[in-house]
Length: 87
Image (cartoon, rainbow, N blue to C red; front, top):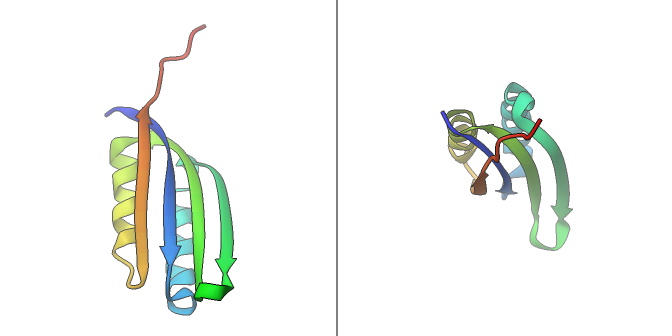
């Protein structure tokens, strides 16, 4: 399994019905989440969440798959290979 670092963008169109599911999934995968920022976009009646992640392709794929399966949620990711640490 390859390690990746990246950014995931989540657009939530139905915040009332999706928030609990999203937070449950993010909690489940908290070990690969480095940072999280959520912004309500009131003018468009939606919310945007951005995540910085560090994990295997399997972990990231499992998380984005679960998030993308929620009605009213769209997910996009940008990942790069993790460079080996130099000790």
